[in-house]
Every structure is written in C-alpha cells, then in structure tokens.
Amino acid sequence: MENAGGWSPSDRPTVTLHDVMTTLRRRKWSVLGVTLLVTVLAAAYSLTRTPTYTSTAEVLAKSTLTSPFDPSASEVNLQTEARVVASTAVAQIARTLLDSSARPEQLLDRVTVTVPAEADVMEITFSATDPAFAQAGAEAFAEAYLRFRSQQATDTVARYTDTLQAQIGEVASQIEEQNQTITELVPQSESWLSARRKLAELEATQIRLQELLSTATTVSVDPGQIINKAELPSSPSSPRNGFDIAMGLFLGLVLGIVVALARDRYRDRVTDADALEQSTGVPVLAVVPRLRALQAARRDSEQLVALTEPRSGVAEAYRALRTNLLAISNRSTSAQGRGGVHEQPTTGSRGRPRRRSLKTILVTSAESQEGKTTIAANLAVCLALAGKEVVLICADMRYPRIHALFDLPNEGLAQVLAGELSVADSVRASEIPHLRVLTSGAVSRREARVAEEQGAMTLLNPAELLQSGSMLEVLAYCGDAEFVLIDSPPVLGVADSLPLASMVDGIIIVADARKGTAASVGAAVYQLDQAGGHLIGGVLNAFDPAGGAAGYGSNDYRIGLMYRRRVSTSSEGNGSAPDSEGKAAAFLRKGRQR
Image 1: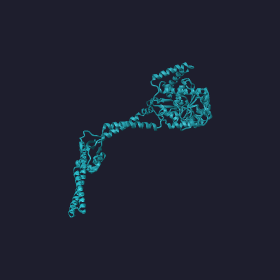
Image 2: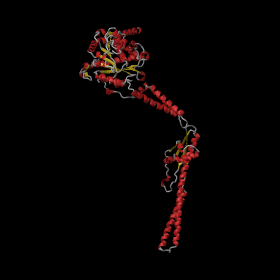
Image 3: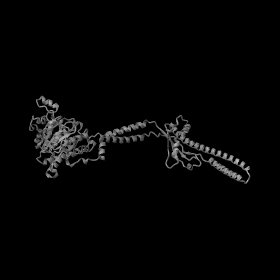
Image 4: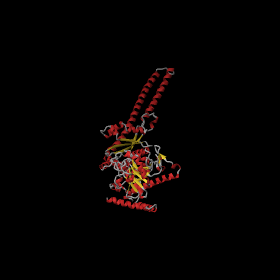
C-alpha cells in the first residue's frame, strides 16, 4: 500500500528497552499482583513447613586391605566410599546403634554424603525434626561406616589366613612323606637325588607360605576415623524463611514481568504508536490521550475538546494532528508543482490512478466506538480555527453523531442522495467560522421511524447510497473548501466506507488504544487498499499517558504555544483566526446554556 511521506512497512521499529519499560509501566499493577501473589505463596509455604535440623560428622577415610597383593589397595576412591555410607548394610548397623524402629530405607532418606575436593574426607549429614536425633544420626552413620569397613577388612584377612594355614599344613604333610621316602632309598642313587630335590622344593614352598601368613597377620584393618564429631544444631537448616521469601519475591517479579510482556504480546492490542504503525504501514499523525471519566460523561457538544479545553493535552493532540495533516498536504501540493516522478499519479491495488492532492479526507476506524467521529469533528474545528475553509460530512448513516456534536438538525446527506434535498440546502454553516457541516440525515432505524412518521422517505441501504454517483456530486459541490472531512462508518462489519475509499484523496484510520487490535486494524487496512484507498496516516485514540510518553509537560508550556499561535495567525492572512476563536467560544457558551 502506498503511504504518505515515503514511509514504508520495512521501516518498522524493533523492540527496544524503552518499549519494554513502557509496557511494564502500563501493566505495573499486573506485575505487582503476580509478584505479591508468588511472594505470599512462598512465605506461606516456608512458614508452614516443619523445621528440619541437620548435623554433620566428618570421617577421614583410609584404605583397607581386602587383598594383600592388590597394588591399588593404597588408593581410596571416595566416591565409592560415599556409596558405601549410603548402603543398606551401613544403614542396618546405624539403625542398631540408634536403637531406632525405622526401616533402613527411611534412615537413608535422611542421609547426605558429600566429598570435598582434594581431601580424603567424607561429610556425613543427617536430617531430622529433632536436633538431638540429627546429631545422633550423623554420628551413628559415621560409626556404622567405620565398623562395616573394619569388619569387611577383618573378614577378608581371616579368610586369607585360614587359606594360608591350610596350605602350610598340607605342605608339611608332604614334607613328612618325602622324608620317609628318602630313608628307604639308596643314598646317592638317582632316585635318592630326585627325592632330595623334591623335598627342597616343598621346604621352600613351606617357608614362602609362612612368610605370607606372617604378613597377613600384620595387615592393618583400620578404615579411618571420625575427625569431627557431629554437633547439636542450634537452629533449623530448613526452612530458611528469609531466603525463601526473597526467592519468592525475585521469582514473582520475574514471572510478573514475563506475564506482563506475554499479555501485551499476545493480546494483540494496538496500545502505542509503534504498534499502530506496524499494523497500518503508515506513520501515526497524532496520539490522543484518554479523556477522564468526568469528561467522557459530558454531553455531546462538550466533546469538542479543541473548544472546551483548549489548554488540555487532548486539544494539543488534535492540534498536532492538524499540523501533521497540513504538512502532508503541503508536501503533496509541492510535489505536484515540482514535476518529475512525483508529478505522475500513483495507482492503487486495482490500477486506478490516485490523486496527490489532499483535500477530501476520510476518517474511519476498524471497529465501532473507537472515537473516529470525535476525532473528525475536533480536527475540523482545529482546521477552521486556523482559518481553513472546512466542510465536515457525516457519512455514518447507521449511528450518526455529528449533528449532536454541533447541535444541528439531522437532515442532510441521506436526503441529498435520495433526491429529497439539494446539496446547497443541506450543507449548513456552523456557528464556528470557516466550518460547514453536512449531517447524515435520518437513515438509522430509530431515526428512520421518526422520519417516516413525519412523511419523509425511509432509507435503509447506506452502502448503496454512498456508492452512487450522487455522492461524487456532493464531493464536487464541496470542492470549493480547502478541506472536506468525511466521518464514515467502521470498515469491518459494514461496507459503507469501502465505496468512499476510492472517492477521497486520503484516509485516516483511528484505533482505540484500549480495545483496538492489530488484527482488526490490519484487516481494515487491507480492505481499504483493495477498494483503492490511499491511507495517509493513523491516529491512536484514548492513549493512557501513564503507560508511555505523554506529549508536552505543563499547562504553562501549552499556554505559551497558544499565545504564539494566536499572534502568528493574527499577523498572517486576513486575521480571521482570532475572530474565529471568539465566535467559537460564543458557540460553546450557547451550547452550555442549552
């Protein structure tokens, strides 16, 4: 889609830290709510848990000789020893030492064994709800481990010595038999010499076995010792209330931020100017702050904030919209005068030429109740106060409000298109100089019944009326004005706005920051483009200043702007702008009196 100012959808901004902070400010209560909830849950969980005490005993592990000839017996594998401590056999010994009725598996659930780096030490920790039992449990498992390893080594040595003694006894019997055989042989005979050699071998074997037996009886079976006994814990190790609450606060804050960003991401809301630009592909011409509930409750004539509250931020936003629209219009006009590539008209999605001048502007929205009528009316007022000749046309024949805003009878466009009235009789001069208004006429069902009772023609097909040739005649008649603003129905749901899209020079789409969605805005933009419309910009309405940048700061600064604008407008042209503001104020006083 073609857009104003050379801006293209590829220029969409990336998400910045400022965008994230803006989202968090806008959803601060959601973040605080999630943080508070998680913190309270963490505190409740921590404070309601049964206190648990832990006590730790340190054991210096030594190698035990399970086999006297094993060359790796001098090395201690602490990871293996830690698994031994947590074994059922050790737990059974500890159960006996504790004189406990608990099963070994239940005791093992309370035991934790850790091995510090670069140390032959094991830390045996036992947990219990009773501090004395925690201390006794740690000492019991340390002692049970030492007993188990000592008994294991002792049993191994005993089995080995028994085997050696049996072998020594057998060799002794063989030596005795060999001596008896030698006495029966002829000395120095071949048989006698062979028997003597065999006897020498048996005696050598007997000596070697006796040496092994002597070595086995001297092997140490000490598996280690307790170097730090378990102490009686003075405070519970868990729960750590302060730590738990702090972690709950931290996790709650993180979760709250994630929830806030996710909600903002997946709710698909057009909550700021960047989101609206991404949805439309055109720049945002103005961001209109949200009216307070007290202001929103006022009657229709006081919704013209550009008149009722000229020093407010909302009125300043309307003036910014006017300034940007004039800038776009001036660029379009100058582009036509310069010639070159800009002099050639562009084409829409259907190939029809688009005009570069911006005189007729369609103001619409994707959905209903997004503020398009109020924005169109206030924009018309701001242009008129600047001395521009403006015609405001209400093409919303289903739910018209322009006549109520300007306190005019609702007879106009519908009757003109139906041939009941002429354009000249229907375009009325408002009490605001330079501003003429063409109301919608009685086309809504409620107003149609009233019109029918009065003998007027009842019209119930706005889309067919708006796409007739009579509508082009209306626009041609209003062509003597500098700007023609058309308030049209929402794009989605009804087809009334689509015929007008190709009749106007530019389209301004309005989105409500509270309920407008990117999907609906994108669908509206697509339909307008298919209808041959030329979207020039968007307006973000009902923006919450607390959630992001809020325009100018103090009222004093806006007073200065207004003073300079009045001086400049009075010194230019025919000086009609100050007089326009005076008459507009009179119109406002008249409306309040009514």
